[in-house]
Length: 287
Ligand code: SAM
Image (cartoon, rainbow, N blue to C red):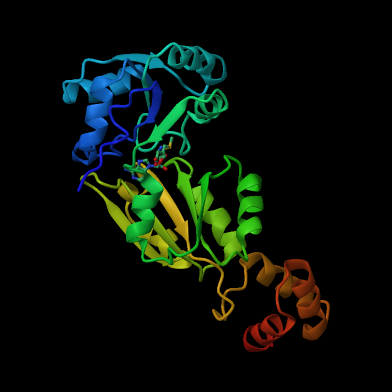
């Protein structure tokens, strides 16, 4: 059943080791074996990782490798690998390099011909996608949303017509602002899933049209708390109401001054939409 050829490795190796995203039971047997037997563990936050190691009685020493020192410390670790040591890379939670440090180290290792062995394990966006009920045949992981409203709206405009599921990480203090920006660009009918506190006591996975999801979250402050992933259903031509709120606003403004046909043509041109879709919506809602 198991083929343990890659472990323990006889040649110096950098192991990429995922750690749990909440539930400690999600660590793998192989992660414990690797963390226990390497010479050093490169960790994003040595105190945080220290607690995990203590829980599993792993005595291995740690070495700090975070966003602010990675470029310079990566070379020190590559040198240690070239001298014959084996190293495990972990982040605070989940899979290293996924919205976490590690890219520079892995890149340098591969350039230096150092063996890199990845272990499979916990990752918040994969966990969220698997239970979201959204299409998982094509998706993109987009990392954290920009901090400012303009950046977020630009991002949503970029994916507005994408047919794949789009996945973002978000923090509790920005969630409502992000959802309002999403509403302004993608409109109230777009299905969005909020997956929060995955693998923990208050795990919640709720998916509904954005126009309903926002009030649902606002009903209970707890729904804005904790760690969260946002998943957006891809664009569907056949969803008749899927006209972005911004386009509808412009259409309403223009119709006050122009015939509906002309207004629909302008909005279709500026938002990359079908003229007939806007014209029909105008007939049903504005005339
Ligand atoms: N490397 C991690 C991974 O593999 O998913 C992600 C690290 S990133 C710095 C942290 C973000 O991941 C959080 O802000 C949240 O968006 C998401 N996340 C991490 N754990 C989560 C959980 N248990 N439930 C929901 N989202 C989580």
